[in-house]
Length: 242
Length: 342
Image (cartoon, rainbow over all chains, first blue to last red):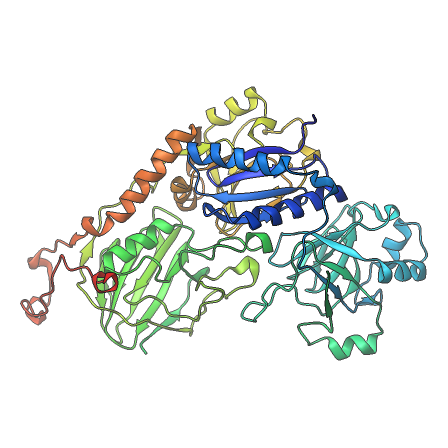
């Protein structure tokens, strides 16, 4: 018997099921699969569920009895299988998001490549072929934290902050990628630029990405980028993953 | 449709309602009014639904006029207010005649004041709410010259008031343990609850930093904590050891450890604390917290019964003879939502 997964209470908001102390692929997969399983139970008390990197959060109207009942139910559900060996939930999408690497639009590609021990062309080849998963969404609406890249991309955040990167920026650190929702200061390195809008309030699909979705970032030319720059979908294509 | 025009906008004015629940998994926090009690008070004064949107004014108000006679209510932090130069009461409802100028000044005893209109501010909802969420890119700060549509008012009396609530200037804030409370040792937790903090000038709808004299409140494993779910009211300890109370427009996840979480009914105390105001945090157990929340919900539901006519001294009403003193009688006990229940 290990210490994990752990169930802890979150103030007066609900319970948190945490699968590991640190980010790891199996723990993230476990959190995503467990959230899908909780949703499938359709417990009437549960008002909202979400995942962070390695945890599933279950929100409900808290009382002493409700905490006892929900803790028992979550423990029972945990015991039904090995969540670290569980497959990812169904209904996910694979996105192809055209990306321009480097140039004045993404000025830290060379610096990031050097930190990863690659020359810039090799870095672009690798990044444009890597398939990553949305590990979690946070910081800003619809903003994905994606991973994990190969181990040599375990590069630290830069010491100083970049004052501002624009919406759609593709940035890298600690084996993860982010597409920024809004213009933001960041310690992650700006290696690519997409025209993909991760939050589209007022549209039919305000949040195109969901946790568990997968993405690839094929390399495009400046000319192609200029053509899609004002399209909120950023020229992205979506396929269903089964 | 009637409209409220902003002749002159204060520095941080937005449209707010009770918020936009249900999108945490997609990175969007609940948002809504920083002081939701004020929304309930405004709704009680105008005898309408607390879900009606109002203008939230941080720090100071502005100048407004409406193109038709409009019922208004003023709640939250007390601000200097007049209609066509004539001072009127805060925490009360009034009739704003068409074309009159409503002038709202700086906050005296809190941080957020609210201007409500009969029928609510009727901007187009985005994902089920009219709340601006500036951190997320929903809505915009209101600017001079903006004109806001006013919803259909079912009508009712004005010149009503509510007793002043005790949340303004309160020092004691009740908190409960949360998932990372145990990451802080006993000594640190005791020192935390024995400390009187001052609300830092750096505070907004995302969070409020707390200042104190003495050491910070670090955990043993401060640097290794993995990013985890945030709920409004969480008190995170940032890198320099200072507590930061996360408010309605906070992020959905964060990597700083949380020492505890402010119970929802006490969060408006923190929201309304002025820069420099003293605040103390006190751990209570779950039963006590749940009882406090139940009492709070009951008190909100009972607000309409607390409503009473503004007392005015007829000798001080300059234009007494201009008032129609007998017409327009309405029932003080009629429930405007009665018809919806059948």
